[in-house]
Image (cartoon, rainbow, N blue to C red; front, side, top):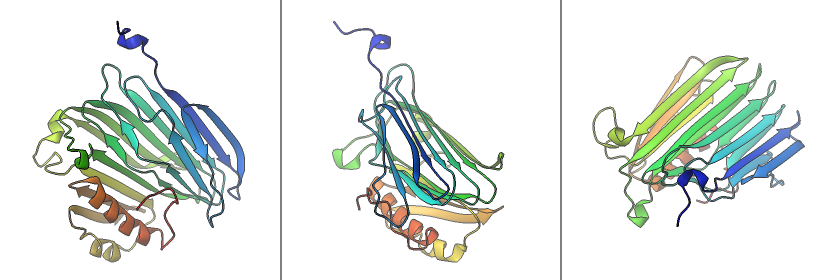
Amino acid sequence: MMPPRDALQRAKGEALVTLDSLARLQRLRQEGSAKAILPGGGAVPEVVFLNTSGGLTAGDRLRFALDLQGGRAVATTQTAERAYRAEGAMARMDVQLTVGPDGWLDWLPQETILFDRAALDRRTLIDLAPGAGCLALEAVVLGRAAMGETVRQLRFRDRREIRLSGAPVWIDPLALDDAALDGGPAGLGSARAFASIVMTGEAPLDPLRRLLDEPGATGAASAFAGRTVVRLLAVDGWPLRRQIVRILHILRQGRPLPRVWQL
């Protein structure tokens, strides 16, 4: 006999990394299914977060945190995060990133794949000190097209916030449910993958807009009030990733992508 759902084992994990003002490792704490790896050897330090449970489902809890006290660093995830079918409570994921004075962080996680009947509540907070800045990517894929998967039911809550000296400069809430999976001007239409890229500072728009021509993807770019925003929709994860890579090449001035990204 199966145990009650509320008695099933749940995955829990927390990984916290502190880098000093020269982006050198000062503290690493890992608990449960959350891990952090610092590969080393690159021109810019990288922090790679991973979830050893293999994915998130009902009642799971996962937290990644990075305190970059200065300098420049890149943070990413080892692979795509997966949210599986969930009954009952939503899985919860928290990402908390702090950047010290005059520091810069590229937060470049790989895609989040949402499976049919997934239930995920994710919150990302980037806290910038005076003079600090960031580039933040979030990409979501609904199922795996190559496996013939279709997502018909979903509970997804996603909130991203960037603060500068304690004041919000970007708040981006998203609620995605069954109704939003249908067509219509307020839904995704035929798209099954989407992404947002936000960077502090206003980048020139002409080079970005010229790149928004990837087959299978559409997008728009804007720059206002001290930030640059790119929104993307795609028929599947692969054209979305190709478009993201091209946009990041411009915004990151040709710097290489994290080594764990597989292209």
